[in-house]
Image (cartoon, rainbow, N blue to C red; front, side, top):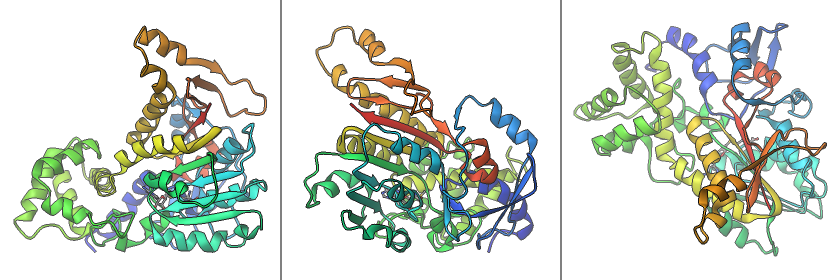
Length: 423
Ligand SMILES: C[S@@+](CC[C@H](N)C(=O)[O-])C[C@H]1O[C@@H](n2cnc3c(N)ncnc32)[C@H](O)[C@@H]1O
């Protein structure tokens, strides 16, 4: 193990807060008021198990421009009390599909994970006739299968757990034997699962030594190791710059290329050592390396799994699979993902008429972006919508977790939920 324990203790708090995970070990809350320690009851891999949110954190969070959810955090709903995991923004996701004018007879969870969201949605929708859960990771499938087993036993419910990339959603639905004109609800909960991060063999964690793998799909051929040791210099630099948004990318690129002369990088510990040695000599400061390492790991993970292109293509494909009135909800965990969701939703709602006969495109764009206040008394979570000819964006601004959820689980704090509805 290349990282010393003392460094990890300090670093854990930052890294745990920045990991893109959307379901987490159940927290046991200690303390009252606005300064809370969360002790994780599961065998979370870190040495330091305490995350503290201070008054300053809350003041900062309050001043952010965001549509923060004011949904009450429902301890029973998220499963506190059993040994399962906590899905992010579960109450908000349930609202998105429950308050829809139409019943949810068909539903696709593109990112099954441990099936926390799926289990709650299946419970909340007894009218459900077709449920499909997709994930590229067979470990997630095993976990989800056992969690959903009894819920999927209802005689009127056809269910399929499919080991597939969500970019193939159209062919997955096309191969089903049920005739389907479109699905009523689709969920994408992006990022890594705790099962993936907590397993050092997967290579996702900055804090655990393991192989430089980072594949969500263990059948895929490209690993992080291949990028670091074989890709052209400029490509290594590009992913650090574009996918990690790392200002020190050029120095890191050179160090990575130099490391090839001594046999290359073959473990996450070696990569972390390289980052630490490089960062301490530059502006990152003594502990700055951990933030840099988080950005470098994010960049590699995005490249290994082709996450951004896959996301963009899949948003279009998912929208095409919706029935009229159907909804697509997406939870993202970093600005690169959220930007793609935001931009693609706008493209989707306006694309058809902008492709048309020219004319006053700007005028038509404004017309299509007719922003109005949400008025439906039942849909209190909708604040402002953007209407287009193909659909309506129900979240002009993304929803973010409630203060209470963030207080209990500071790793959810970068989550953003955006929802689009087909006309
Ligand atoms: C954050 S977890 C989902 C957690 C889940 N919502 C729950 O409640 O337990 C994200 C999951 O998406 C999966 N995933 C990531 N990229 C994928 C892709 N392109 N296609 C299918 N699944 C993917 C990961 O393997 C991971 O299990």
